[in-house]
Each structure stands twice: as C-alpha cells, then as structure tokens.
Image 1: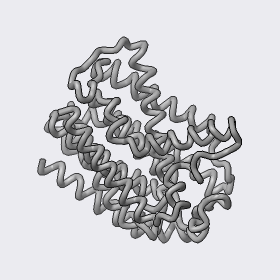
Image 2 (image 1 turned 180 degrees about the vertical axis):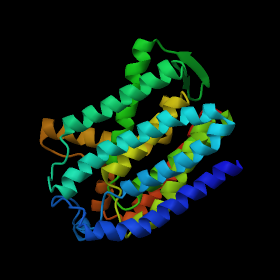
Image 3 (image 1 turned 90 degrees about the vertical axis):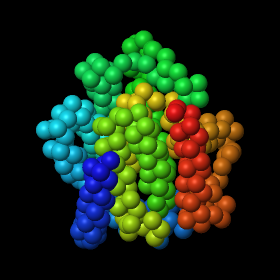
Image 4 (image 1 turned 45 degrees about the horizontal axis):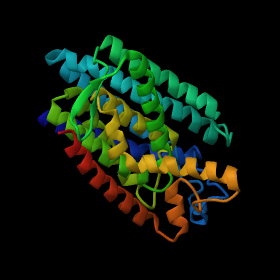
Length: 326
C-alpha cells in the first residue's frame, strides 16, 4: 500500500501545481463559462469563470499513470500492461469532452459538439474498451450480483452490448451531475474511493492504482472547484470521471454496483428523462428545473448544502454497496 499512497500524493500535488499554473492561463485565454439565461439566476454571476479544468485532471492522471507504469513494468509487468487500457479509455472519454468544450469556449459555438457526434465518440471508445478487456485481456463475461454475492456468466452477444450501455449511461450521468460548484467532483470522489476499497479487498492492483490516481486528482481539483469555484471541470472532466467509474466497475465485473453507489448520478439522469417525457405529454413540469440539483437550488437550497447532502447520501449508498459485494 505504500506505493498506492505515494501515487495518490503524486497526483494530488500534481493537480494542485497544475491548477495554480493553468487557471490564470485559462483566464488570460478567456476560456470562460457561459451560463444559461434560463438557469438559476444565482449562476449568472459565474459567467466568465474558467472552464475546461478537466484538462488539469487529465494531465495529472496521465503523468501519475506514467509514473505508475514505470514503477510496475520492471516488477510486475502484467499490472502495468493491464493499466494501459484503463487509462486510455479514461483519457479517451476526456478527449470527447475536450472537443465539446473547445467548440463551446474557444470557437464560441454555443451548441458545442452535436449530441449525435458526442454519443458516437463515446460509443466508439466504449466498444473498443469492452472488446479489448473481454477478447484481449480475457476477463470473462461473468458479472457479480450485489447482495446475492454470486456471479453469473452472460453470453458475449448480451455481455458486450450491455457493458457498452453501462459505459454510455455512466459517463452521461456523471456529466449531468456536474452543474454546481464541487458537486460532480465530491460525488465521484466518494464513488471512486469505494471502488478502490473494493479493488483492495479483491486484490485487483490495476484498479487500485487507477483509483488512487483519480482520488488524488479529485482531492487536488476540489481546492479550486468548491464554492466559490475558481475553475469548472467542463465536459472534459465530467466525461473523464464518468469513464473512470464505468471502466473500473466493469473491470471488477460489478457493473450492477453502479446502480447503488452511483445512485445520485442515476437519479440526476432519471430526473431529466422524467421531466422531458412528462412535459412532452402534458406541457407541465414535474421539477422546477433539471437535473434535479437545480430543482433544489430553485427551492432555496444553497449550493454548499446541495453538495454536502448529495455527497453524504453517496457515502451512505457506497457503504451499502460495499457490504453488498464483500
């Protein structure tokens, strides 16, 4: 565990240093957030806050991953080899988010990447990752059922599409959770910490390494992302973090665990789906605004209260999730 702690600290301090250096640079480049006119009025004052902070997270993760790979390649080359697809998929999702952010804030295209193009990019990365770990790494097509603590094998024709769906759903769920200062970072930090603990209990070193790196990165990023945020992660960061959660859970053969430990992002997604479906049918709204964290804002909750409440709920759910698989 000594190295895992070391790699966590490396990613933490790398993120802090990068934040100190890059946030002023993002300000000079005028890479600012554009707030929705129809969004919560309290968000209008955030307009101009640097976004694309996910780039800071991505650079930190890549640097720490290289450090970990060099450490393991001579001692346990198999661990280093298996770490590669996890990092590549994670960064791949971040690149899709970066393209979207780049079009929005650099090219001033308010629509960003077309939803169909974004989903196509996420789909390609998901397909490549799932096929690689199943066909090349040979992790198998069995998945663990929480609470029952048994694994069931799935035919490849069902397993591969299902895992692809899990990856697409998870990345988009974390993306929707990123709407107020520190929310996505805090919630995802708790989720990834839980996944890392599970990996420790099951002895899956590559997930322990990835989890340690990302936990350190999230902790470092929180210094700049908590209310009042000095930088937003943008789609670069939220899709990257969603990729970590999805890739790790699938690698551990626990995709169903996401429904428990990531229930907050799941509910955020469901709130949007329910709102749109209900409005199309009745021209009325269930919530004041979605994703649901905006509903609570418009009910008078302060951002810090929402972040604290959603994070504590995630902690409770993660404790339940942890006991459901060990």
